[in-house]
Length: 424
Image 1 (cartoon, helix red, strand yellow):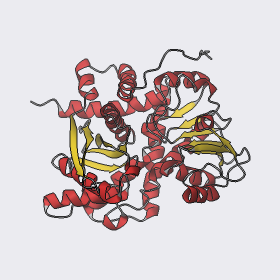
Image 2 (cartoon, one colour):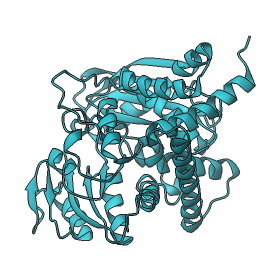
Image 3 (cartoon, one colour):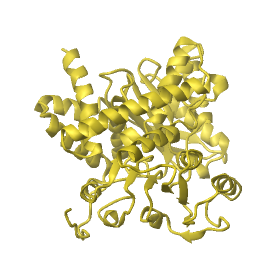
């Protein structure tokens, strides 16, 4: 086992450069042609939008938005829209490319896209949020569609935001087009099981990883950083399969109880108070401390760049399931690999969301809907097959699961690109 000193050099945390590093590592394994590599690295289309909105006060404020379509070699582009003060063009580019590889990893016929608006939705009224969403949807309406690019919820966007986008797009077409977005309310063509899909898919592959590492998941412990939609539902599902969740955190703090947290009560506490902080019977710790606890499974379900050169050597978990996008940096990956930690990469671990989005799209197009048992059964089958494909590839190339996932995904997109050819 290699010994890593804590780096005193500032690590490059730019999400797009990290995404390109991950791509290049796998492309080297595949010995991709330089020209094909350039095609696959480069976003197909990128929009930067100025969004003037009339605020409730009567004042006009201009917001900035983005939509990046990374690749459509295997099907329409697919990807969420996030509303956050820290949204940047590089972040959206990175997330769009990750979506391409995520869809290919689980072998669904989509390419990658992503969108974002620089804003703090907590400081906007519902009517301001609606006007901002509709303006953004109108500006991108010529570039999206059920056969072109299908948006979905992401950070601080939800089913209501998708309903506004669907309605705005439909108004420009003169008829209802439910397939233009996924993550809609079920009464507008949304899929059963979509709300829990990201967490459920993560739990499915976590169970697979426990089998590989000879961990009895019914005796295992887990810590979860981030207690939003993915993190809280993952906690509930892990508890249902017998795993003991000992710690959780959100943006306001963390809690730990080595004997286990009562997850239903914790979810109720979070719903009532807005945070896991202050949960009775648990000790207060920081969100970063949650990452370093002695546990079998660690689920980072917050934001990017949480496990870095600074703290990777203190990680004690045997399995890390990345419910968040990009929580582990390349430098941290190397340390974790040498420590023998099995990292289920984001493009596999959180692909349950886009998989059930695919199911929603299929159901909208055929106007025939499935019950939740069928949705979950299909999801479990796809996630199990994807984990097996990635694990087998990682063993074949004698590498980690992240590189294995990228090799699987890039190979699929490369073959599609080569078969279609470069036109003209």
